Image (cartoon, rainbow, N blue to C red; front, top):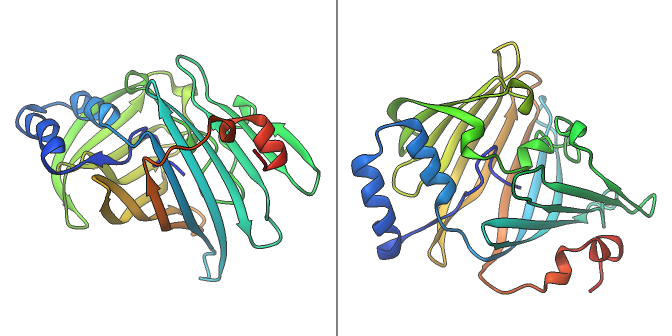
Length: 263
């Protein structure tokens, strides 16, 4: 699952990354520049992960799921497939998302109990994805210039030295949030903390990266917590296994694979 409203989540490190990070650190003085650099930062061409998904009730009771995910990025557009492996109640549920240039992402979900694939309409963007605290829109990309970006401060968040940026939709109806406040780690250009506010201006969701790890030259959020502060429900995503830049057949990112689960 993607970070809320940030297309690029994992960043180049070591010498190659320093060539990008150093100029940003010296000269980024406004919110838009920071968010453009977040958006433009490199990410793997392919990513394959196993994820433990914990759905945490306000009383602390937890339901755990196992999800396998593949993603492919080409021409700055990302396709992604998720398969729920357990428990039995969601096993073999499959989700496909294909990013498009200049229009909404395409999304489909296969429901094994009904043996049918359903397209997710744009009007369903604010609905919960599979009972998590993420909406379908949270999982989509968002262009930098769909929002205005104001640099609020520089601060330390959970040990990360960050820029704090307020992002407000230029067209209110284009987002379920009235605005977001995002803390971007200066060293990796990774959003590590986000606050999302509802249409009344009340705090709605909080996203926290609890562990960021370098894998294969990329800084990857390994443990992420998304909390609905209005209900107390939360979703934790923990990557338990990961492969970067290992090619995946294009046939994985098709409706045929979504329908059958087979190549």
